[in-house]
Length: 138
Image 1 (cartoon, one colour):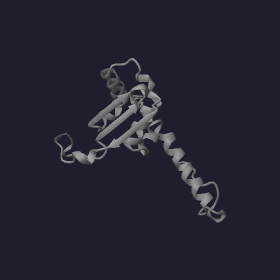
Image 2 (tube, rainbow, N blue to C red):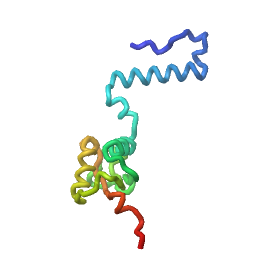
Image 3 (cartoon, helix red, strand yellow):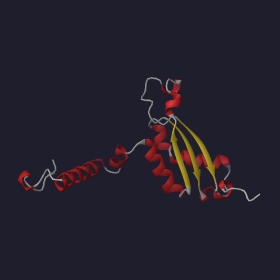
Image 4 (cartoon, helix red, strand yellow):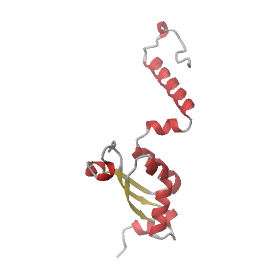
């Protein structure tokens, strides 16, 4: 078991600084013990989706909307926790330049493969290049 407290309680353990120190040491311990999955455990699925897409696609626009509430009772999610199962995703990225719509969607699906294997049921994707999302000059 890690040593979470560096000083006896008489030296201000319950002060703001003492509590923060304990919190961050405990957090560091959990992350160390869980490895890279430690940070993912604390994040919502929407946050993980944002993180993965932003890191890989360097999106100039990234919108992730949880619409799971619209699908409660849906056959695909009956009997399971229906939280964070359905998302609308809009992503604008220069990495989509020269890619077909099918290829863009495959890129997004590939990036979210782990999520799809662990409870993400459906995503609706709008994938555009910066030129396609810019207002027309006409």
